Length: 147
Image (cartoon, rainbow, N blue to C red; front, side, top):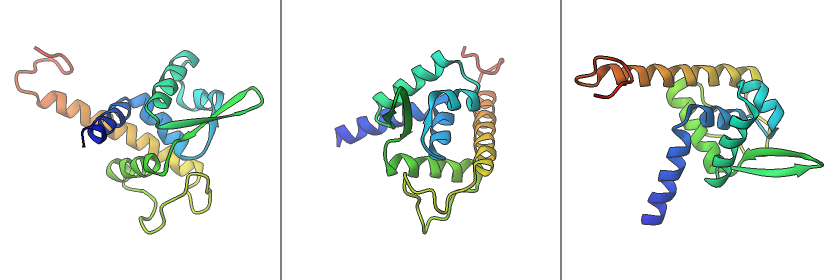
């Protein structure tokens, strides 16, 4: 049980970063090389590479090489299900539960535009929730600052 708790802890810590969460949301749409991810997420190559390395270390993404390009994808159906759950919780538009998508199956998946909109809503909802929690802290005179 301790091993599973440690694995869950690593998984949740990786999800607790907005940039890594956005990366996972983009990879939920399908495999991607670094450059398209960089353009979609507006991250520097250095920052994106560090986040991808962390996700790879935590076994949330896998890679495959095609010539000199490395493509990233979600590592498992479990990771895909977790991202879908996050969509459902924060965006309210997850795919139907009766037909969970396969990682390599594009059939029945949302269009790229729909997923982009859902990702934007997810990040906005996360930021709003964090701001509200900070404001509700007892003795907090300035948001985001601990006393």
